Length: 349
Image 1 (tube, rainbow, N blue to C red):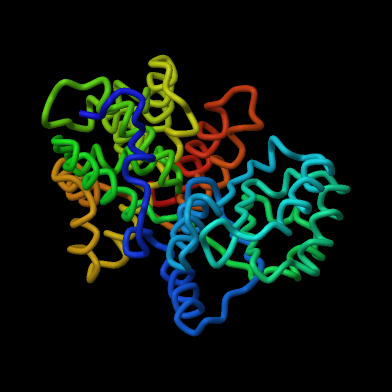
Image 2: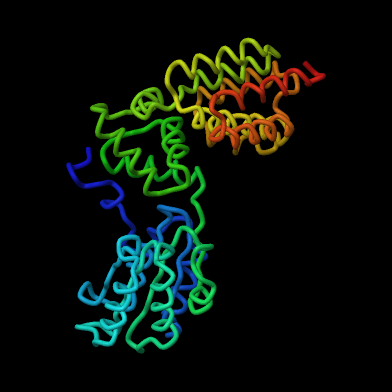
């Protein structure tokens, strides 16, 4: 189990290129630039939260021989003013302590004020030879074009759910725990494309459980996620063509206090699986490898009974409904309307 005050994200933070998952397009270029001695004075790492931007910056610093004495990490969200950047501009002119370079990592750089950006721009235009800036942001559109144009831009991709599922299982194993595939898939889905959030959810599960083998039902309980049975209840009702049963199953999920947006996300994920199994039979084995045994049996059953529900139209209608959940004061309403639209207009039912 995890030690107190030692987060899994910190414990398993990548320390080498090979440990950075899903960002080969970034790592390959950085490695070659180091090998060819073509190091830029400024880099801009863009990507959603928890995709490895800061970890990659630290590894890059280590690879070019920068020690902790000459590595400066600055949270731009807490140092937004022009005075903060002026202090930085003055400090860059001092030589490194014991490294060939001084590296400044500015996280959440989009939070800088306009005047702070202008001050930073002057340093980026004429930086000392011994200084490298690595700017990191989750909101590239808030970074001035003048700043972007003076940096080498690298875009960090969101990891796939498969990558996050494998990460959850791998880290759990290192912690002495086994998580079934369905449980790991749920942790990955709740992680929403973030390594940090996925490991944060996993830590919550491991902190709660005293078992050496954790199944999906326990993870549903700990995280408050909807049970797969409740999601499959809606799917089964859809395949039976029953609007009443589908809406009733959705209502029961709401009464259980689950996050309806998470419910919608899991529902869409299952609709996608059913669609692939129905229309891409050659890929069936590959799809089955990614789901649990119980899910496999469920899909084998409903795909025999289905009356045209696992279609691209159904998926598009529910995707649109999912996007409307946040703006609806009745959170279940978009999904209820989707159910009515599919079954009310489905001529095959």
